[in-house]
Length: 104
Ligand SMILES: [Zn+2]
Image (cartoon, rainbow, N blue to C red; front, side, top):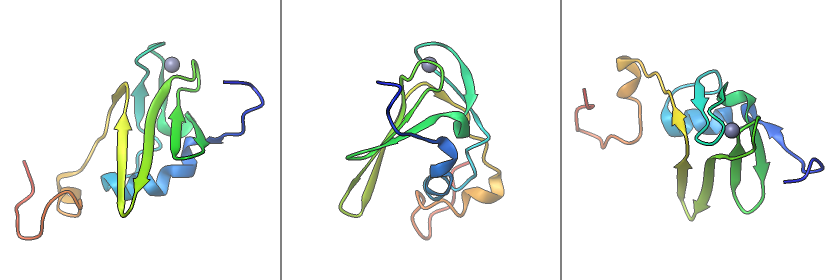
């Protein structure tokens, strides 16, 4: 990774992450699997190419890869993500099929 690489901060995919997880994530912390730094998702660096790659702002190791295949988005998360979701928000998550109760 060179210093000349063009990147955005993690806030740039805040809307996409909210679509995927049903909650705002940019302020939530992530612990890097390589350097152990804990930083909010919004402070990570976003690189765009064949897909989206979110990298640790301290060591540049991969935090998240998002690829789009047809109508599917495939997310690969690395490190420790803390995602706080209110029970009342669980019913709106698309991972639940219509008619099924949310997991508790
Ligand atoms: Zn790191």
